Image (cartoon, rainbow over all chains, first blue to last red; front, side):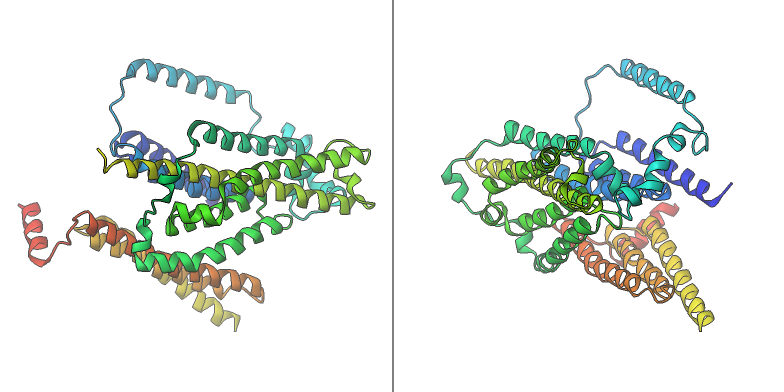
Length: 334
Length: 113
């Protein structure tokens, strides 16, 4: 019984308690906060498992941005959860069956952390032992994510772009000029302390985003985390100065363009390596020295990921709070 | 020298943990929203601050780590009071009044009877 095992038990217990609390509470604000706590706890759990990159992503995206996005929807909905009209016992049966099947599925899995596991025999040793010679990055996670599994990451980036397009297609219709001209003073502008602290925080957040973006080759970090942090700074700016001001500084048209440009950079790196005579996304071909080629390729690819993630997060936040503005304007009429 | 540094580090870490526990107890035990918020504020600024301070004695020549710890401390001391302030303001805005002396006593008596 090691200390780590105890920490695991405590963290998993807290996760289960949080999940039950989310289910029990009827207050939507409380359940949003609880989902944030849930993400933070899972990030801690990932840290215990030495997966710092995943923990970083979970903390930035799960606990940070997604909580923020859900909070920004709060004024659109009622404070309390509606009593569900679903058939409860049926749901319980479905959940129990699925859970039982999942647990049954784990029976076939090799014991956790055992040396004979396929994961320890197959590709992991190659990543750990040869990635320094083949890719040459101290952070193996970045090597796997951006180079060995570059195609998967390309798919993930496209998924994020698709999410942005989906939100735009569903909610992103343009408002009339007259409505846009109505300047609403955002709530945070009226609070001096919050305003000053947020203003102080925006530049360090942006610098930190760039640090995470370009330091991802050497430590935890990379495009996904950096994009989320960058978007957080701009969302803070939007909350501080209002949507119409933010729209003038970060024009929606360019942000839409940037979301696509990120994916295009990623794809272009792949095409470039194909043109140089290697496989799609084989960065060896990008420079005379394969290691230099890998470095250049990973840098560009991570930049593409960062741009797309940041742009899509900003698009989603703009669209959500755009809905909010519209509803505020409507209220006085009725 | 290292013994002295270790000692200082231990003192700061233990004090920090003490404040974390005290803050958590206060969060559960205090009677109204504002005093509870005060307890929660203690865990952030004093508890986490002292633990970071204790860790700073352990850097052992890695100045980049010291810089990172200092910046964490800086941002905690910047954001935590600001968030407490925002919480208090939001509570006042929604007509949450602090409990004053007599009310606390009355409530305690009511709970005891």
